[in-house]
Image 1 (spheres, rainbow, N blue to C red):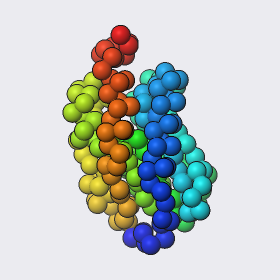
Image 2 (image 1 turned 180 degrees about the horizontal axis):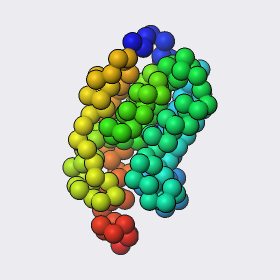
Image 3 (image 1 turned 90 degrees about the vertical axis):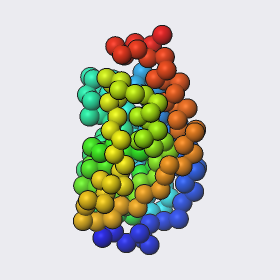
Image 4 (image 1 turned 45 degrees about the vertical axis):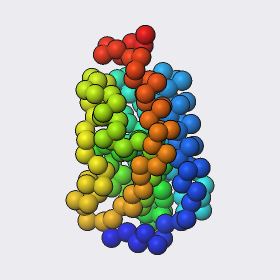
Length: 174
């Protein structure tokens, strides 16, 4: 089990809004509006990642959280990652939660819930959302991942609402 007492006391709203800014930059670059950052035990942002669906050639697994977890596991030892917090614009899906778990990141703070995202986007072919809370995925594991969220959910949802409402099923915008 991860000792959550080792996790730093951080300004969650401040860092979550930084993740929202990464999501907006992802959107401006032509990708899906998801973004996340990794904050270390000293409160420093050490990685940031936007969604990579378009940037990675239509890779349906190129979610921001999965890409960041992969980069983090290559860059930092497990002990350092256990004291890190991932801030993400939307709740990690089951795939991303698995990547966070295997990477060893100690805490996740998210904006929009997976349930709310699914209600908003429906069964869009570019985002066939699973309504499976990351807490459920983490609870099946052998170590604890601290989860905070949804937090600032209406702000986070606005990133998605304005994107998906004007996007047809072929991926084109109105």
